Length: 315
Ligand SMILES: Nc1ncnc2c1ncn2[C@@H]1O[C@H](COP(=O)(O)OP(=O)(O)OP(=O)(O)O)[C@@H](O)[C@H]1O
Image (cartoon, rainbow, N blue to C red; front, side):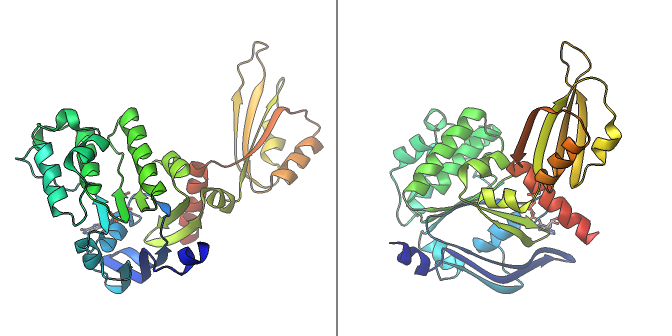
């Protein structure tokens, strides 16, 4: 029932949380609530505070001020109760054990463990189960970390850049498994630099910047928030770029040779904060654009637009 979801205890609650390292404020007054069943991507440039946020959520770091709750309790209590599975960026794996032994240990420690063989199969590591952990490639180690995060039936799965180092098929298998986990009602929170993953997987996207939440919404809402749209068209013959670059509402323009057999065509790509007005003015120049396309920004372009606008505001 929807009302249950709305009134249920939040999976994660941050209230005005700050965390500094010396003079660096890594998390700066962060408030957010995650609800049951959400798949949430945490985006942000390097140093935005993503890992610190996840560490606070997992009780690995303590907030300087503010409150962090997981399932209405402290992070530590939630973890001890087996409600949280986590895969950290560089979580140390015990060197001298085999992959199979390590997964068994994780299952033994989980209050609601899955069968070791199932965990191994799900993470696609059966072929390396007898290998020592310190003999793994980067991508294999990531798969093992994933196995450890899903060793038991946790309600919240936290993943810090989980697919870094994975090849394409490992990545696809990983997200297929994560989708299954989410479809079973689990909450999934993952930090990533792969915006296409956030776009494809997450039903909610958080954009962090200098420890603050810059945007919070669906991928479509984040794209709309960036405000700009892309316009592309071809022009035949020699062109005068000056009037094109003077069109209203432009945030960027690139002009390239379209490489047509006729030789002298150009492709113009524009970002505009008011595509209707820009296109109207374009026709007003008396040029005849061919193959005119107007489209929204991709999540990656929206992310860059939002974070760059914030940088410009602060500088
Ligand atoms: N242990 C630490 N000591 C001092 N400063 C730290 C420490 N950990 C993080 N920082 C600083 O805090 C800020 C936030 O770092 P954090 O690792 O949380 O960012 P991030 O968004 O995860 O970055 P990335 O995308 O590069 O992994 C950065 O300026 C970083 O240099």
